Image (tube, rainbow, N blue to C red; front, top):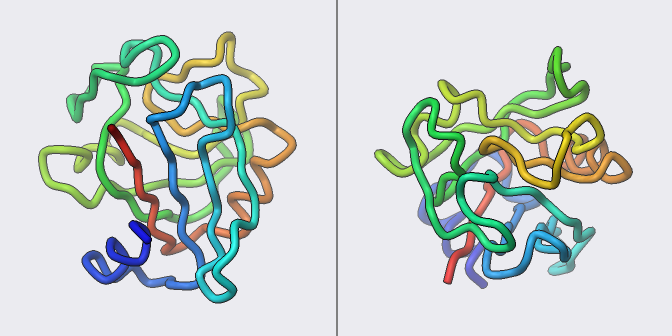
Length: 151
């Protein structure tokens, strides 16, 4: 399992859950999975956005540059829960890969609800449907590995 290999590599604070985002799948389908690593099961699956400048149905252009409005590749770790002035209940993330997603915090890349978005696409954040946003954040905040899978 890809997530277990990455957990060994990055050694996040929490090893009970992992989030896998499969960007090989369309923005129109479920492609985010919260894995329960204790019970070897998928707790939930959901749609998740990618940045509009990264591609239409599938992201194929990525950036770590501030202001690029593109998605980033690589692995992340979840941070604390916050209330975003723009999006409400949200969760910080930190990129773990130098020059790939290490500017995630500076770029203000977060998990948030897609409720207030004007389209399916974000500016680099991981936006999920309002119905599952809080559950994802409550289960995985403070130290869970996020693995973004590409091609």
